[in-house]
Amino acid sequence: MSCEIQEKSRVGTINPIFTCQPAGAQFASIGIKDCIGLVHGGQGCVMFVRLLFSQHFKESFEIASSSLHEDGAVFGACHRVEEGVDVLLMRYPHIKVLPIISTCSTEIIGDDIDGVVKKLNEGLLKEKYADREVHLIPIHTPSFVNSMIGGYDITVHDFVKYFSKKGTPNFKINLITGWVNPGDVKALKHLLAEMDIDATVLFEIESFDSPLMPDGSAISHGNTTIEDLTDTANAQGTIALNRYEGGKAAKFLEKRWDVPAIIGPTPIGIRNTDIFLKNLKQMTGKPIPQSLVKERGRAIDALTDLTHMFLAEKRVAIYGAPDLVIGLAEFCIDLEMKPALLLLGDDSTQYKDDPRLVAMKENVDWEMEVITNADFWELEDRIKNKGLQLDLILGHSKGRFISIDYNIPMLRVGFPTYDRAGMYRYPVVGYEGATWLAEQMANTLFTDMEYKKNKEWILNMW
Ligand code: SF4
Image 1 (cartoon, rainbow, N blue to C red):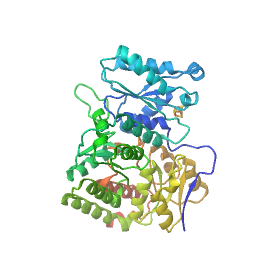
Image 2 (image 1 turned 120 degrees about the horizontal axis):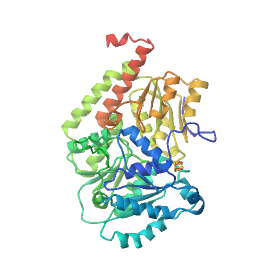
Image 3 (image 1 turned 60 degrees about the horizontal axis):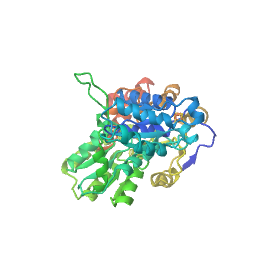
Image 4 (image 1 turned 180 degrees about the horizontal axis):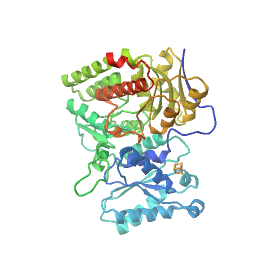
């Protein structure tokens, strides 16, 4: 019995788990107030990403494209960035932040977006927009390496690097949430409020669950301001919840501005939420209040009702964003479940040394595989041809057909989730998230028991 961590051996990808780096840059950008990203590439690089955001959040987001065409792909298209910036500034008088996000095509042809930014700063902005605060930030996200996860990490870093500036201490902490849902942000803010901690939640997307107002306005935007980003250099410390989605920025703040950083663990499950609260206590000196001890107790009570009877020994496959997958796997192990397969969908070389995966490799006593650079065929092939028996799949909506075709119950979690209603509203982090996840896993299994007439009578006795 063992846990193997290995890269997919096949060349090529059949049904990818992730989309590309610029998607991550676009997600980080929509977390900033008064910001519209300008993606330098073909229109599809924006259209499909916007569609994913809209499908997942059921909201509309504004992202621009330089709309590269054949001539630009051959002769270069920096002029389209120049025109695009001008048009955006004319059309949207409130915009202050304009990241220029590169793509695979514009990186390959070598369009110099740093040079364009310099030219615009010295020309157009001085001549035509001298009375406006405008920040043009080049973001390099060639999509032939890494994935949307790396793109998010790079962009968060680049924004923080651009804006952070030493001033007077603000006695706050920086909280970099990573790529989460509005429900997660709400749950994290609740934990901070209970501990009476003043935090700057960065790339804050709570309002992506936005109200439809009487005047008809419904466009969502993030809440992180330029001032928030500038002030990151003056915080007591930074906690980045995810190693691969914000860890780079936390390290930068520590190195450049001496702001101590704690990276991880992703607070999924009881164990990791406990560590998160202890980290908050260590960083701020604030005690963990009785209200959270009670909340933890309620969560443990809920889990105890489910674990032994329904969740223990269940074999599960998990795919999606690495910190989410690893956090979910740790939680499943704590619930006595048996993660059999973890799929991490990009070519990052860091996974094999991730201490959380190394700990699983050393400690699990059942057959478990962790596949990096994985695609959905890695899951399907094992089920179809190699006898992999699963009780449950955890992952986003792109894997739904494997669940349907092979009759394996699946709980939707991660991004994008568009085939179940309102999932973005619920947290997976904190004690609240632990309860929600465990109960949803159990309910998914209950429905499957009924559908397959598999010991469904137990539900009468429980
Ligand atoms: S892979 Fe390249 S062309 Fe395709 S969406 Fe991503 S950046 Fe655009």
